[in-house]
Length: 140
Image (cartoon, rainbow, N blue to C red; front, side):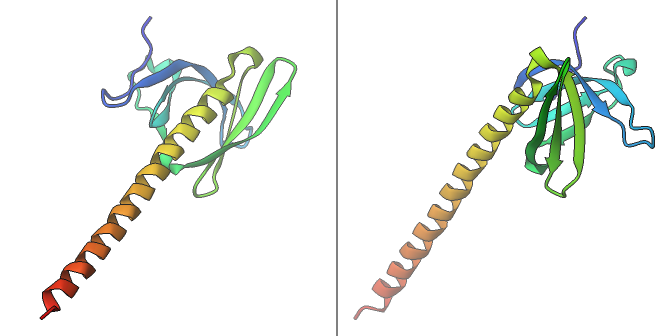
């Protein structure tokens, strides 16, 4: 059976199953089919057969993977969003989903930092060039 897929522009790093703690009063663990890409973590309900709309956690809105704890059979971890929302997950200890998500998030954040740095450098270079052009235009 082929699992759900994400958009064609986003390269899939890993697909599989995670359990997410619900926001309901009872905080039940619900199985989710997940697709990890270079841009996001998409969560699908297994009952939907992959046709249900995914909940997408874009890396631009994720601050960190936190509170990793191993207890017997499971590894528990929390994804913290930039607006401070905490989303709890668990997976079998040998699956290492927390590490896969953390590495993809770090890669995304590093690429974004490099792009931001290059943009700032280009802005500074343009400002310096503009200043030099204005000085040359005023020269007698």
